[in-house]
Image (cartoon, rainbow, N blue to C red):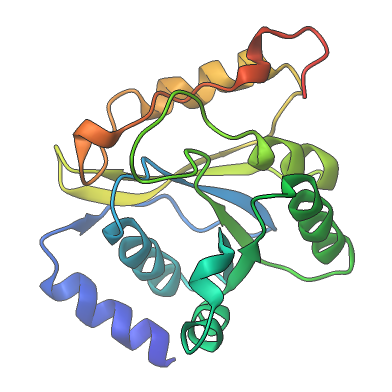
Amino acid sequence: MLRRLVSRVFWAFSRWKLTSEPAPTRPTILLGVPHTSNWDFVLMLGIAWRLGLKMRWLGKSSLFRGWRGPVMRALGGIPVDRSDPSRVVADVVARIRSGETFGLVVTPEGTRGGGGMWKSGFYRIAREAGLPVTLGYVDRTTMTTGLGPTIDLTGDVAADMDRIRAFYADKSGVRPERRTEPRLREEGTAAGL
């Protein structure tokens, strides 16, 4: 209740506009894209709380040190040890298979600074757990944010990423100069991920 109230106040006074498709009714991987600023996190919390979506998110382990740890975990955070990304996929898949229901927010760009390629963990988790992918977005050009369509991945990495790229083609992020083109290294391999 409190989260919904906080989100209503946030959206009432925010210069950003929430224009969203309905929240998914089943567990999903929720992409937080483009990830160009720390404000992305605030906007994603506002979206989830307003739509009543139970969310979890992956964050670098340094965010969970000291006093921040309990706060980040209360906000749905799951610490990621970047030295062993395969363990992250296995841990999240195990949580989902144990019956925990949530939307897992993933920022496949991996950093707010822009880079060459997206990280493929979201794709591997979705395929291994049999989850769809919901396309969350932030677009400074229109000052809108929200949830786009929820898609089922086919296993054809290039075709799936073409659909994702088409959706994000006109989404700029809070800091457009830091945007990373949606592309996975694995798109060129016949075996996929």
